[in-house]
Length: 353
Image (tube, rainbow, N blue to C red; front, side, top):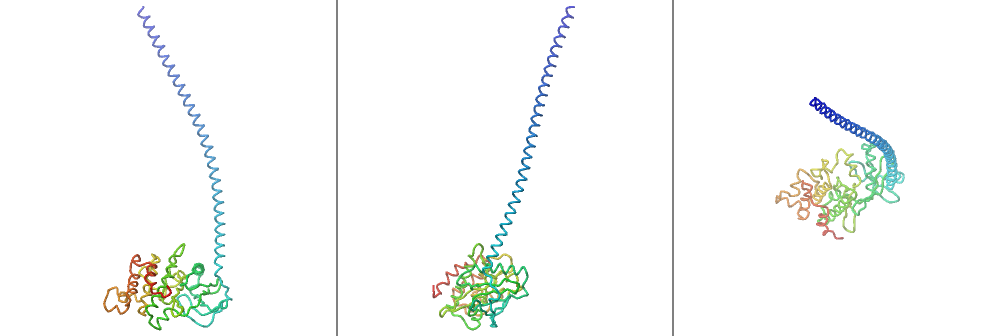
């Protein structure tokens, strides 16, 4: 009996212990449930906060888009104002057609127009008329941009640009009138070494100015004896480079550049052109002045004595000229001298220096 009683007591204790354990587990479950509910509430609050922030960001984005639209409108307005100012600026070089009188005194013909003597504001000038064949809306716009460039170029050895017409007719390009071209003088007689050096120096100074032009250098791609024009200064011929303001225009409108390609270096027919392309022209021009022959790319080695054949010294006997020609006509543009180096080598020949 006592044994049975002890067993019952033991079972009761076990039951009580199991009950306490169950209650403890229940309490733990309740606590975990409360923690879960608390986390869920926190998550809900975070979700509400995130949704609020998202709405704010969406509103800010809408405001930013509005500001961008306003900025774009302001930029467009500013660009129109700039264009208007640029258009006003280009009017500085515009000459009314009825103020230009063209005479019958024909001066020459080039790849893009004919040149006649004329008068403007009571002064004798040269007037170039562009061939109608090359006129198009694109070329007219290009021509106007080039005139704007030419109007900003001022140098003693650049042909003075006076102005041009800007109407529906064939454009007229007005410059100062020079006595003759270098090519004409070479056709008449041989130049002395002093004349060659002085005219070459004038050309080099003009090209050096163009190459240093800001914000971008001007590359004169058609330097030749035909567009080096001459005028008297005392008893000495002095040179001025022409067509510097229309170099790009002519490059893009002429199918063939008469007289220009024979002066050009190997990179002239590529898009990889820098100011160094002008040095080939200069070297070929100097060679032409020494020999009174137009440059011949097929005979260039012979003409400038690159191969040092003894009999070729009769062509260019002056060592300074021969060295400059050889260096300017190097195939690699980087091997050619700078215009300042050329000027330094030639300036001792200038009697006015």
